[in-house]
Image 1: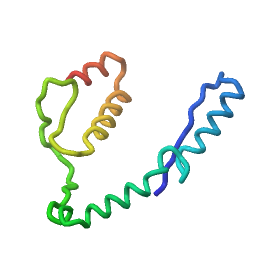
Image 2: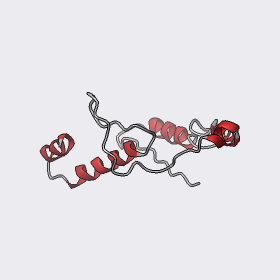
Image 3: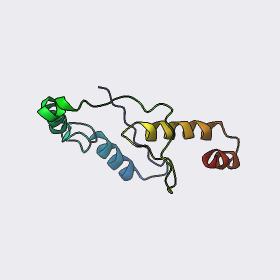
Length: 113
């Protein structure tokens, strides 16, 4: 697995702040990093659960939801009836609309439409 991470610091920040941000950003991903320190245990537990009697009885469905309509609830945004990547896909689709828009009015109409 390859992970890329960027640390964005204000150009006007002091040298001390820039150095601190560089230092902190180096320790995000590693065995002692904040984002990976417990992942080894999680994956071992997932593997163990998948091999269990219940795990073998109820196979996981990894299919994308495709063009299923969202569940209609009185909430802002879209809700799906199962785990999926729809949140991430919707974020990237909205980001693409924002990049293509000529002004904020277009962004807002795309968001509400």
